[in-house]
Length: 169
Image (cartoon, rainbow, N blue to C red):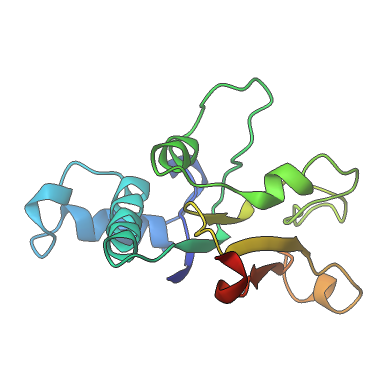
C-alpha cells in the first residue's frame, strides 16, 4: 500500500486558515467520532495512518508512506523526541533516506523561504518491514535547476527491487 501524505506542523506554526486549524475545528465539532475529541490534529492523522498500515499488514502487504512530515525522524541524541519518531518505532518503520542520505553535506528536502541554503529534512519515505523478495535500491531527492524553483520542498524518490520468486527457492 502506497500512502502519500502531509502531516500538520506543530500548533505554534499554524494560522487561522491552515489544515491544522481546520482539523482542530473538525475534531472538536459534532461530526467527528467521539474517540477523536481529545486528540491533536497530528494524533488524529497518525491514528488514520495507523489504520491504513494495519489494513495493509492484515492483508499481507507492506506499507510505504511518503510525504511532508513537518518534522525530522532522526535524532542527534538517539532519544525519541517527537510523535513521528514514536510512531515509526512502534510500527517498526524504517526510513531509508535517514540512513543513506542525512549524513551527507548539503542534503536537504526543505529550505526556509528566507534562505536558499540547506534548511532541514522534513520530507520522508518510510516503510513497514519489507517482504523477503523486496529490497530498496536507491533513495534521494530531485535537486536541479527546474525542481529547485517549483516549491520550497524537493521531490523525494525511492526505487524498490522485486527479486524473482523462482530464484528464492
